[in-house]
Length: 538
Image (cartoon, rainbow, N blue to C red; front, side, top):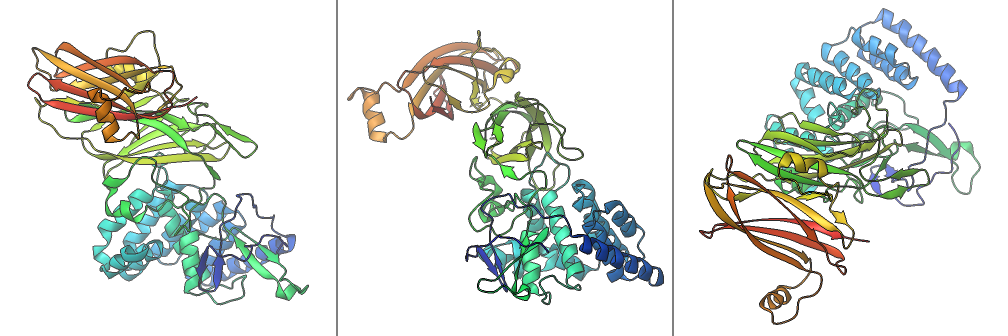
């Protein structure tokens, strides 16, 4: 094994039994090529395993070690053939196939194969493989462990639904990774270890929580030059993130709010790295919903936050050429996806943005989880955010108002949603003095004619209630960073929907975060409101 200089600096981010685990400050470590002596010995051992398998073709240990060392030698086609033609129990052969498929990045195939293996394996073994205890914290872990195996299904479905890193990638990479780790644990617990110690529960926990070791290096212990006294450091894949949902979201997914799901929290309980993505960059976007009977149209535009990552990766919001959907052949530059999924048993509805253009999806009118996903496989950068969309129910004749859609400036304001969507902004930021164009719809309008009264304000966030009330009453002068508009329109409803747009000129001194608040009121006094935040920056 190569000599290295990597060190924890004496700290352990996580202590697991006999092991000290720490997060590298930089995602830069790469394993050295295998030493030629290691390659020769592995080939000799594989030849011995091949010979042994001819004598005892149903031996599970021999088959597993053949698959393991063929994978380590990157002879994955041969490894898959061994797994498919093995003479051991059907479920173990299927699990080994899933292991190879996951290793080569065929996540959908691996996910499907692992599922098939779970269905036919002994019940007790299936319960052990499905056990999520090591990935949970505190009281939630205790509550889960108190459940009988058969009573855990609903929780486990929700767990893997939320843990799926990218809905736009076919399959569930994080769930597939879990079973990949479980299979590897079965292989390693009856094998010699480079650490020269017996496999124990701490080895299992380290593997299930943080994944396989992709490379090793030796480090001399301070004060000695003896090779036998060298400490051994195992490295995990770069770019690991905690895709497992925070406990509060597992308890109630409807509390998932935009910008609040942290993928790299301090002292992550578990980590998983997609080989394609080492860096994760912030993204910004806007989402707006528009009702259509039993359906809802969800509009999204977004992309990278303008920033620099390291010295060679520059990403800018709303830019980039199109690329193939992540999965088979992730080439190209950047891609943005909107995925909508109402629950853990439904397939996501997905729209892909070409080069930063707005997208829209028509889905059933029900509350749902929205996932905005951006990736650039060429530069190994990804970004993601999730939020819960509450789609309120209302009667046909009840007054309603859509979300406010922020638009880029155009020569003429749009008169329909179809006209507005191509001009949706990729974020909620705009410079001072710019005109901000807004679009919305009103629902439940009489099919005849009626008068609607509108009030629109753009007001800085953070003012106290008393200050706002005093300004409104004229007791004190209003500051020059508020815009208020009032007007009335006589409208006629076509399918009880009317479209509206307005341009608002911001004032010179407006800087910071502002709330755009819209009020729509009928002559009867019935009133509905819609609001959106914007940021005014140089």
